[in-house]
Image (spheres, rainbow, N blue to C red):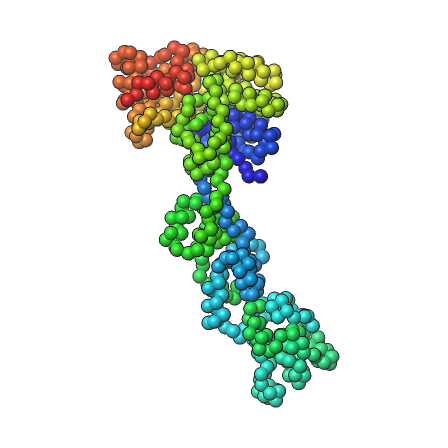
Length: 538
């Protein structure tokens, strides 16, 4: 079953990470194959939560761009390099392809053979030598085994068309000769005594017992076929290993992780049709033909805690969104097909997911309940945020019973771990939880930092101002706000980039708003801060 990735926004907070994990568990219980992922580094708070409930950190998801592995290319289309020329051609005819990758016994890619290459080699190549297996010859000639001593046959082909006396008097047979002969017993006797590599008896020819004894003694391989000398000589070269016709031109190969759009750009210049696909350690995966890549298996994703394309994973437009679970305003994401879209005016995505568990009659394990509780307490600042609803409170009460903790005491412990700024640079602190928003053509960013001690920020205020001003300039944002929320005081301090001066003055209806201005009760970026900015920005 194809895997579906579930993830939150680019700056993972506790709600987005725990929502991805809790929803993934639910979906898997309902028979889906899902995996929670994250799009960035985890905060100290989220790390504390995962450690507290002994949950493994989800893997990082770099992008969901379409890769060659997502195309319905010819997977497992390759042949061992010791396949005969005839079987190779028959394989390509059966599969309706004009080229096929060659591999060794470990499936390592060795080269590419094409129909054109086969034709050119058979016309212009060496028609006198054979490098193949006994079984290949047997198969191509539709023969029967008489004597077999060597699994591989390397040698020079000779069809006996001269008088016996000419052969006996003129030709010195060697150990690597391959003799095509009928029931000419004097020639056969000479051949077995000379210890040739292989005798092919055509026309279902017979061989005397005394000659067989000599052949056994000298390890001479013998095959009998019903075909004529002419027919045998004409087709025996088709038993050669296909590697003998390798065109000696290393074809352009692509790794299966190669991005589809880059592939199209590259192949437009190369102008070939057949491209071997290679995996790790040069293992051949199959063949892509440019004329047959219309069908694609886009990566399936479920978004939690966001529905803004700017906040999501790279390449989202190349993926298939099958569901969104969120508690924010409607964003910029659109889909080609109808999807399940669950959005509610609650304080946390996990509150919605709790409802999904109830609707599907799935019991919430203690470990998952702990994650969900943590997400709600984090996003609602322990149920004190103005975004908190009665449903959030009801869900917290239910999860408290499952987990067996006091939500208030646990929240303080979680916030203490999460607000520690120790070992973090100012730039890391600004980027811990920053979100980008857009109104028409105007982009702006709001970073929110939670702390129990604003003095830590205030001491380095000028550093923070320099960082957010530089960020606004580098990323061409209209402005950047840094909101430092004091959990215990239930309010926030505001630092803003230079171009936000007029906007901040309009918000607080005062001139010269000082950097670090404190706003009591201002704790929700989603419900209190961003809506005001959207209203006033122009």
